[in-house]
Length: 391
Image 1 (tube, helix red, strand yellow):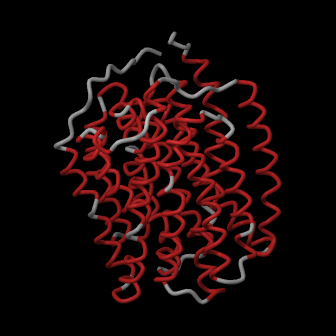
Image 2 (cartoon, rainbow, N blue to C red):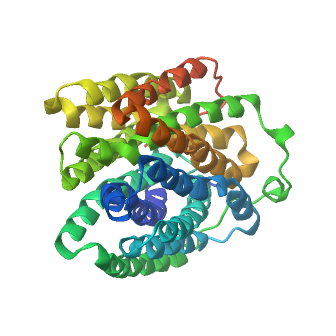
């Protein structure tokens, strides 16, 4: 395949960046509204943790299957259908009058997210013939930026208009999605072709390094999802307002967007292994300082923790795609979704433990989990991939 100019790759990936921003932005409405939902529906932390687990499991556990489907059918408009489901479901979260209604909305939104991520990551891999780490970081940062902006938007909106009027937020996102769909149609995206993408998947074909990488991503995801889900609750328990909780999430995710962009760009030059190691080894001290340090340093510590935690996301995705190149959609689902979902299974026991021992002591243990991932990374061997560092 001829190498496409880097500028053309930027233009083609831009609508996928925007789709990621919209999808993950609306999916992020849940965490900042969780304190309000706990009060309104009289939820325990165990029930809140179960909701978080359900949301993550739904939008992650089925990602490998939907990624394999994307490999076979190669339909670019999957990247529009997924966000459409997400914005419609999360737009109605303020209308939920029962725990059961919350469950239904989170499941529908989860299916939308599970459809979008592997399909879009496959397109990024097909488009980015040069600087793939940088291009994947650009795409990945869209989700982080959307997730960072959304808490401030939804908390401010609910404060001004009330929880019952969240369905109106579907309109601007729907209009944006129509514009993205027009760009996608005009660019005539195509998925990677080849016999490997059409063949059945076999566990025997999975390289051992991909298994090790998957466990590293699971451990990283456990800490990231736990802090993302309970961050607003941690801040409000320490006397902060609902808006402060949303602002904390925004700081965490905006710094994560920067970290992902830097990590992906550096991986093109130095390789994945040491970016992965630094990201998981340096995040825990900042989580611990956030939990136990002075309140004046809380936001700075959150920003540093987010920067290091999220810097490994595009690096891990590209490394996994290169270890199993014939199944890009499938492997993207494994590391972007399934690994994240397995890490998210810990939310329910974390909530259960927090009900009994307190949220801060439990999250202190969670903050140290990435150190285990750091030990595993030392055994990781990169594939023989030549990174193109030309501009």
